[in-house]
Amino acid sequence: MTRLWKKAFAVMAIGGALVVPALVSAKEPIPPAKQAYLRYCSACHGESGKGDGVVSHLMNPRPADLTQLAKKNNGEFPFMRVIRIIDGRETLRAHGDPDMPVWGEIFAAEVPGAMNKEARIRGKVLLITEYLASIQQK
View 1 (cartoon, rainbow, N blue to C red):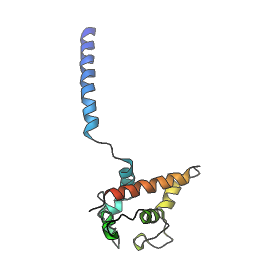
View 2: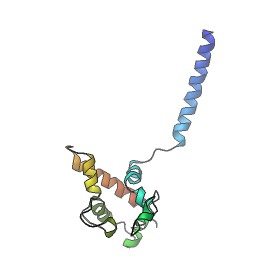
View 3: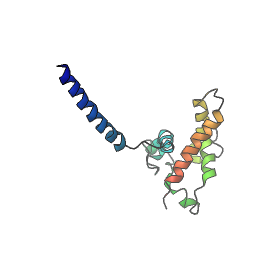
View 4: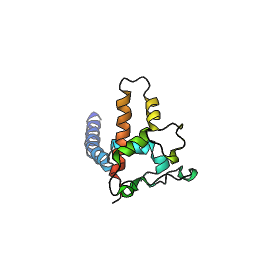
């Protein structure tokens, strides 16, 4: 009986060794920039960035189509302006009045007392901005 169990275990181990890599590679990991966008922006702007998020129908005005930012800026993605909008240094009417908390403040609250708080906030803002630059329609 022991010999049979050893053979069964060996077959399962070899089978698992062949199946697990196939399962892992079947689904590509989501890049950090897209993860940040999906976590913080997709509820309003949608997974594709077109302004069709799950809560977009509740908003007035509707969320912007973030895939059109470069097109609306003479073909050039407004990288620094997008950073300022996300972190709250520049406000948009769609994001409410200037007293409304914006992402820079929300990110700051997520890392209370951290010595590298500013770097972590900038990192999240840059990740989202880089992702937005990558989804621009030509």
